[in-house]
Figure 1 (cartoon, rainbow, N blue to C red):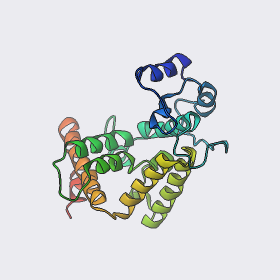
Figure 2 (figure 1 turned 30 degrees about the vertical axis):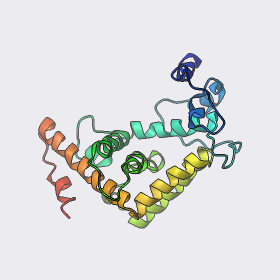
Figure 3 (figure 1 turned 60 degrees about the horizontal axis):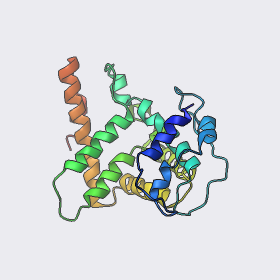
Figure 4 (figure 1 turned 90 degrees about the vertical axis):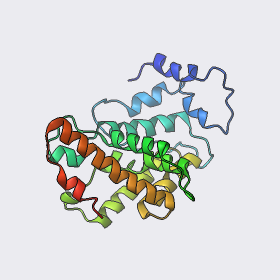
Amino acid sequence: MLPLSLLVRFKSLTPHYSPSSSSSFTLFRMTTTRASFSSSSSSSSSCSVPAGDGVNPPSTGVTAPSSAIDFLSLCHCLKTTKRTGWVRREIKDPESIADHMYRMGLMALIASDIPGVDRDKCIKMAIVHDIAEAIVGDITPSDGISKAEKSQREREALDHMCKLLGGGSRAQEIGELWLEYEENSSPEAKVVKDLDKVEMVLQALEYENEQGKDLEEFFQSTAD
């Protein structure tokens, strides 16, 4: 269990901030969430899916501290789940799903402005586009699962995560960003899908240089 003293430090990060009921900084008011964190984080090594207790406030626009902790604890799986393609190629210490999304976020952050493309939206989309993999894992074509089945599993996982977060405006934003990416339905989604491929081949190049691997298949998969 995370020590209560560490939770107190979240609050100390914003000493000059005066919280209001409509602010996203409600997330950091974690000093009262010791019990909820204990119940949802009994293991530091497993990726169990919190079921939720049915008390999350519906669509208030405010993320309750207990909901935020449950959601973030589930997202921990993104940090511990390794990307399947690298595992199958026996890469030493392969990147996690979170590693991949983080660098995509940085790519969007430093990208040149593109007319008609909201760069801030690209950054947000990059850091949530694989978020459902916290539950379903990193499913690849070699797993023998159809695209339709993969999409359905991820949609159900995303829906669960949004409900876990409380179903407010933040959860709605995450859901909309994810769906927009999944359906490739906006200029931002198209840019982020390109970043997804660029990040993968950059990582492949780094593994080739560092570990002497032949990862040409990953470059070929982005040839179109």
